[in-house]
Length: 322
Image 1 (cartoon, rainbow, N blue to C red):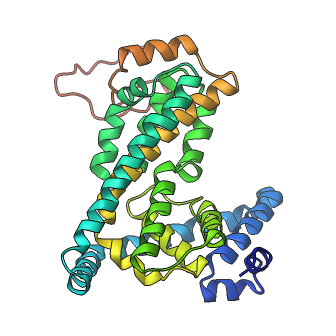
Image 2 (image 1 turned 180 degrees about the vertical axis):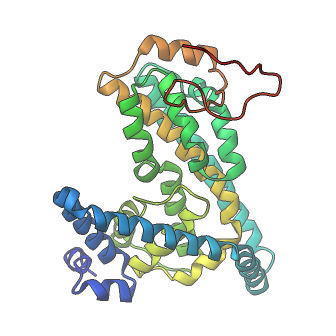
């Protein structure tokens, strides 16, 4: 397929046809145009936006129920892989995992490290500063679990609240460094495992589709695998059945994806804050030097300025007379 044909294929003939045929690029094109139209309508399009939000929650609930059966699918996929290709196939899967972990580590140290050094701080000190959040992500395999703490930590680091509130949530959908590394390596692995030849045109097409399909991916466990499935179906050159080869080890690579995504978003927040002049450099250096302090759980205040929530057992119940 030529480049012109590929671009023309992105434009759907009918909206229903794009969804019925499962053409992810045509669905994305329609979604972007539909989103722009909703934005232009302003408050008039609010009911439609609310409906889409509720519909998305329903779909995520369905996906959550399906994902509970994922271990059975992973068992079947691994059993099929070993039964069809022998125990030696585990060696190739292990090599893929090792290469992925090494690539993520090199990306953080070299690429993100160079960006940090160019902006006057150390990547190692930043990683130490968000160590608690990294442990949470490592345990849950989801970067979303550390979102509230990251908002607080980045503000303490010297970035203004307006910058943090914009960059962090946006980065969770559009700055998924670990997911991007995973998608490219997994796609190339499937091509090699299935002996599918990919010339330079196919590689560039795959890269462009990955750039599009990876945006808006949810920061939850297994989202990278779903994006990969959508990408392979959109490209059409790689067999979607090849996903069964890596389904069994996807969970082990999910931790590295989430950790890399979290570090990348932390770096992006500091860098963007410095670009727009909304970063307290002295506070940044002092917080990084001290390693940061633990986040204490706080309770919301009521209208009288008194913190709501359970009262400690040894607290004295007092009232103030006006």
